[in-house]
Length: 281
Image 1 (tube, rainbow, N blue to C red):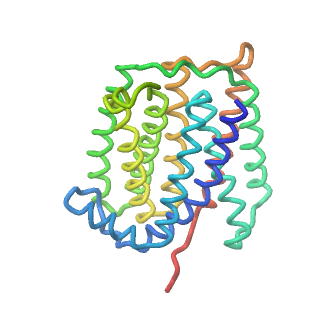
Image 2 (tube, rainbow, N blue to C red; image 1 turned 180 degrees about the horizontal axis):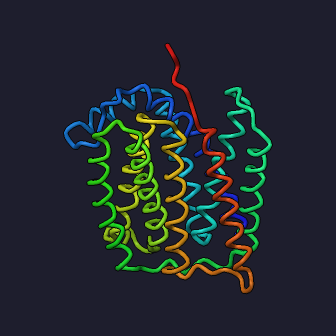
C-alpha cells in the first residue's frame, strides 16, 4: 500500500509539471490540426519540434512508469485519485512561476484534495486480483474505436465545445490505460505478446495524449482538462469497484465516498491554474 501510494504521488508530480509544458508546446503548432490519419504524421512531427512538448512527453513517460506501479498495487479508485494530486502540483507551480495567486477558496481546494486522498488511503482495502476479463477487454477495444471516430469528428471544429469533447475523450483514453494496466497478466513473454491488453495500453495512452494536445490548441486549459480529469478518475474507479472486485474496508464506505468527492471537487477548482499563455514572441 505504501509503495503504491508513493508511486501514485510521484507520478502526480511529474504529470503536474508535464501538463504545463504540453500546453506551451501544443499551442505553438497551427490550430488547423485534426485527428486525420492523412495528417497525423505531420501533426506529431510538428509537436516533436517543440522542446516544451518533448519535455512533457519525457515527463509523462516517466510518470506512467510510476503510475503503472500504483495501478498494479492499489485499488483503481485510489491510484486514480492519487493522480488527481497533479492539479495541486500545477497550482503550486503556478503561484511560483506564473505569478498566480491562490485565493482562500483555492487554498481550501488544495486542502480538500489532500484530505480526500487521505480518506481514500485509510478506507482502501485490498486491490482485486489481476485476472483476465474478456468482456472488459472487448469493451476497451470497442471504446478505443469509438474514441478514435468521435475524436476525428470533434477535431474538425475550432469551437469551444470541441475543446471540452476532446478533453473528455482524452480522459476516456487515459481510463483505458489504467484499466489495461490492471488487466495485464504476469507470465511468459509469449503470453504477454498474445494478450490484447499489451496493445490496448500503449494505443490508449498515445491516443489520449494526442487528443489532449488537440484540445489544448482549441481552448483554455481549464476547459480541456476538467472533463479529462473527471473521466480519467471516475471511469477506472467505477470499473475497479464494480467489475474487478477492488475492496473498501468494512464500514469505511462513507469515508471513501467523502474522500472521492473532496478530491474531485478540489481538483475541478484547481484545474483553472493549468492556464498557460503562449509566448507572445
